[in-house]
Image (cartoon, rainbow, N blue to C red):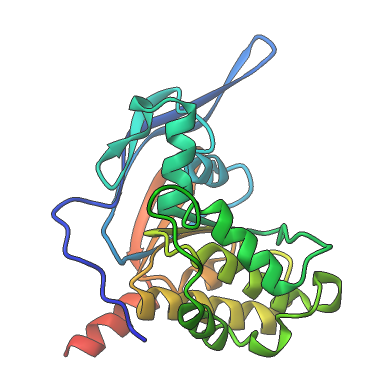
Length: 252
């Protein structure tokens, strides 16, 4: 099953002169300083930088999880600043899937139960146009992520890599236009990290998933089509990753 993203004339993620300032007593700390970037539909972008570079704050701004001090973020043409809290939550639920370093699986539910919760949270089963979860799509996701035989196990019975793959399936099950991943391999060993990165690349390629990944690891970032390096709250460098080479080769 391959889903080709629809052509769009505008970036699906757009940040313009984005700033985030935190107050630490009387001191103002600028975590993000005037960042502008555009991500095209179906693109895989990695943002890399050391601890304290501002990349995680940028992640939270792009995902609408925190409000910007200045500038704006638009998701598929919708400006977060124009929305109230309920509308922001609705936009996140319907358009963005999140994967975090800590897998955030519910310990009392099986892998399947956690994925089903993701579908409910995504809002696809509620409202006037609500629909039951597409079991064929679920089967495809679980096949792609190699967790088909682990769905009835609870998180404590799964390896770290399996838990992260369940978390990815949970993020993808409601078919969000965007997948945002914050240090998705941070709690994994080298071999397992490589497998999870390959899964992210495959979901981007086969599902047409726009993917933005935050990482401190340049080797992990290399799998993306484009790599942005952050330092001191700003994007200081941009380069093509291995994903760009793969896409170019496939078009040759």
